[in-house]
Image (cartoon, rainbow, N blue to C red; front, side, top):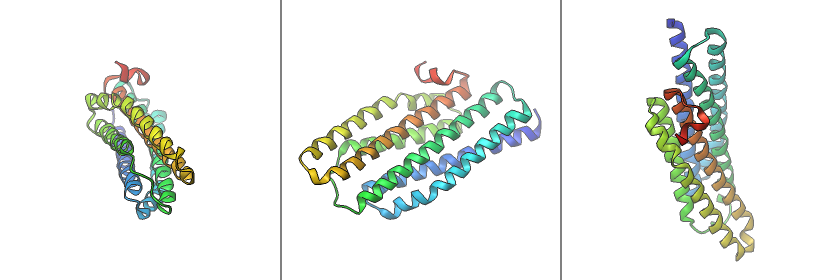
Amino acid sequence: MTHFFLKRLAELRESAANMAALCEKALDKAQRAYFERSSVLAKEVMTGDEQINRLELEVDSNALGLLALDHPMAGDLRNIVGTLNIGLDLERIGDETYNVARRALFLNNRPPLPYFPAMENLSQLAMEMLSGAISGYLNEDPDLALNVCQMEEQAHVETVKVIKAVIDYMVGEAPAVERCVHTIFIARSLERVASLSANIAESVIFITKGVNVKAACSN
């Protein structure tokens, strides 16, 4: 294993770490844009999405370059492939935070809906899962990653609660239908962030333990 290879591998992980930090910050701003009705934060998230996309291309290029030129083995191969998958999931998380921000911007220009407690629970859970998955990757901690995996079902439960509460409200408030639909889509985006964070956690387990990604969270 050459010094050049180790340097390029470190650069790959650094790009992924930078991307993860941007996604974490974007999710925080997006959910605050919704709860605090801040159009400024929503616009910041939407403007910053392009930077996340650029970093995903950087991760992709660096990973494929290492695979093509250096023919890594065992743990190094898992590290590269796992990081490549993490980059793809982070890019999708960036897209979902953009969607949350875009819909929050729409809602912020209209009369507010009632407070839905399950939406806050879901938002906090998505944030916790993303932070945990990122920490698991940076610290190469499979136990932390497994904990993230085990939170995914609760995210689904909270999403169902949000949708039910919003629909119950919408039935008696016909003028609020459009706003309610946007709120449901925000919940769906947060649920997808949680699911993608679980995917990242699975990749962390794959990197650290060599367990098949699809089976990682069930073993």
